[in-house]
Image (tube, rainbow over all chains, first blue to last red; front, side, top):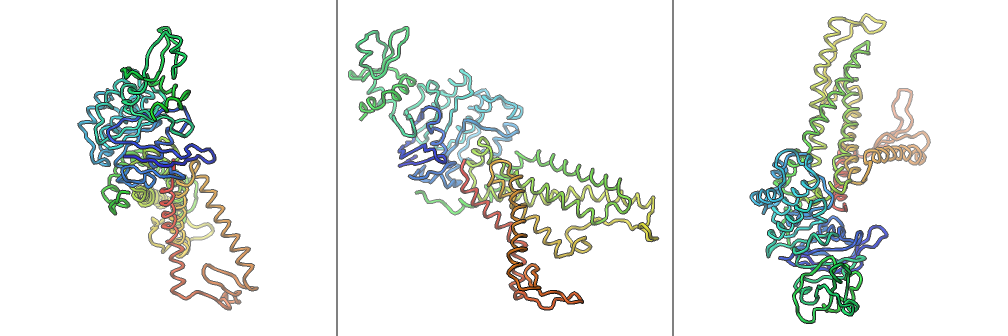
Length: 276
Length: 286
C-alpha cells in the first residue's frame, strides 16, 4: 500500500531521514514509535504529501503523495496531533466534509460518535479538546479510506476514551485498510497493533509484526539473577525482574510494548539479530 | 505509478463542494466584515456631510471613498485568503482536503476577487445612495452657493463607477486605476501564500518597494539613456513640447502592438499573479 525507498529528508540543515526504507501493507495496524524529534510526524507528513522528500521515493496506492492529487487525498485521512475544527455544528461539518470522501458512511460516523460519546449539539469549538479529537477520529474512520495516518491520536483522550479508541480502531480495520499510528505513548496501543516500527535518529531500527515478536521474544518475570544478567533487557520491580529473553522454547507470552521499545533503543542490534 | 483521469486538475463538482465548505466555515465572518465595512463607510460619509460646507458627497468624494475602501479592504481580505497555510493546525486539513490546488485557488478567487468586489460594491451603494440623498435633502433645505459666487451648488449625483464619464480622474487613468486594484490585490493573494506570517505587511512592503523600483528605473535608468529633451510616457517617447504644447517629435509603437501592450499592462498582471500563486500552492510544504 505504501512503499518508501531510500527516503532523504531534512529541515533546512537538520537531516531527519537518511535513506529510510519502509513498506506498509493493507490489513495491518502499524505502531510507529520513537522519541520526540526522531521524525515520526515528519514521516507521516511525507506520506501525506505535506512535505516532499529531498531524495528517494514514496509510492502510496500508486500515487506520488507530493503531487497531492484529489484521487490520492480522497484515499487517505490524516489525523494530526494538533488541529482546529471549524466553528460550526457537528452536523454541518459532516454535511460538507462527507462528499469529499466517496466511501463515507453516515451510519458508521454516528456509531463511532456514539461510542466515543461525542456531543452532537452545539458548535465544535465549544467541545473540549478530547471531544473534538474524538469527533475528528470518528470522521476519519467513517470516511473508510484505505490509508489512515494518525499522529499521537491518544493525546488528550481520557483513560476511558483511550480504551474506546483501541476498541473502535480494532473494529474498523479490514483487509483493504492500513492504519499507521504514530505515538510516543506506547502503552496506549497495547493489544491493538499488528506491527511495531521504531524510529531512532531518522532510521527504522526495528520493524516487526507482533506475531514474529511473540515467536522470537519471551516477556517474563524472574528472580533468577543469572537469567537477568543474560537477558536482552531487564527492569527491576517488586514482583521480580521483568525480562525480555530469546524465546528459545517457543513459549507464549504477552509482549510489553514499552519494555520492547526501551529494549530496542538500548540493545537493538542484538534483538534484530534474533529476527534476521 | 497509477494513471489518473484528467479531472485531477479541475472538477466543477469538487469546486462546488469546496465553495460550500468555504461558505459554511467563513460565511458568518464575511457577513460581519461586510457589516463592519458598511459601518465604516456610513460613518465616514456622515462625518463628511457633517464637516464639509460645500457639496460634501460630490462624485470626487464618493470616488475616493469607494477606491480607498476597496483598495484597503480588498488587499487586506486577499492577504487573509490563504492565512490557513500559516498555521500548521489549519494548514494540514486544508492541504489534505480532496481537491486540486487549482480548485482551491479558484475557490479563493471566487470569494476573494469576484465575491468581494461584488459584495463591497453592493455594500457601498447600499450606504452611498441614501447618504447622497441625505446630503441632497440638506442642500434642498438649506440652498448654498459656491464660495464667492452666486452659482448654486447643485445636488450631487450618485457616482457610477462602471462608467468613466464624469470621473474625477481622466477615463484612461481611471481604467488603469481599476485594473491596478485587481493587479495589486492579486499580489496580496500571492503574498498570503508566499509569506507564512504577517503576510499583509510584508506584501505592502514588497509592493511599495516594487513601485519605487519601477519609478527609480524609469527616472534614473530609462531617462538617462534617452536623448536630451526626450521624455517617456507609457509606451510613447516624445521630444520636448512646443509652445502650443504639442510634441515636436513622437516615437510610438505600431498601433496594434501599443494596444496589445496597454491591454497586457492592464489585464495580464492579475492572471500572472494567480498563476504564480497556483505554482506556490503546489510547492507549499507544511
